[in-house]
Image (cartoon, rainbow, N blue to C red; front, top):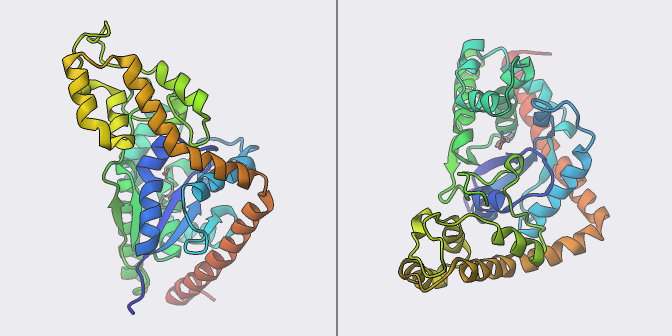
Length: 327
Ligand code: TRP
């Protein structure tokens, strides 16, 4: 049997995950772990690029790992590991930083978005170098595919350029990775913003209990032209409808026609929606409780994943050193 191709995916540990993470990434990762040899990186050093205070990093990592597990990522198939625990990331980051110009990094559109969104006046050197660290993450494991959302595509492009430049200078070591884009990659936020995101406070967490989900949905914005119960609505502008699309596909046609005709009011439509979301979350929440009572298992998963990841990383660094005639 041919060997499975390797993919490398990663997330910054920002704490408990939400439905946007699930729809935009995790659902895809779970599927891909059967088709590919998958590695799952916890990008804890990347957090420092925008936040020097990382007192919560351990707790956030544990919360994130629990969410990875409860949605069905299998640590036997796909090792979970922290960037900060594998020194080769920093080593390769340093070498790669010699292969990219400042101008190239300044052109990165993802950086420009972050600078605007976070109101950053003076970019630190490490933040400018964010994609170089990400390139080291990917190439250390010789990831050929990188499952990401649109915003990360520029980083994969820089990774490809670095691989090319390295090979040209020192001889072939790295294949150029490709982004694996997620199809349904964005979930709208509860406030109607284009993106569900923690910093916007418009999320439904994977750990939200039913009463929390109900309350959040109750406040969600709907079609502003549907004011009274029997007014006809426009599902295409309603975020609740977009959640039905994802979590209630069986009733979609009925909901669409009920909304358009005015027969279905927003209150009832939201109740149907929260009950579907709760149905989806119920087994996830149960598993989370189980794991929260077994934190040693979670820690062990990390330690084991880090042992496996380290052996791959060490081997790649040996190749790099030998290609560069270091040592
Ligand atoms: N930059 C990615 C994000 O913010 C996280 C990340 C770090 C990553 N290293 C990676 C993603 C390597 C894929 C591969 O989502």
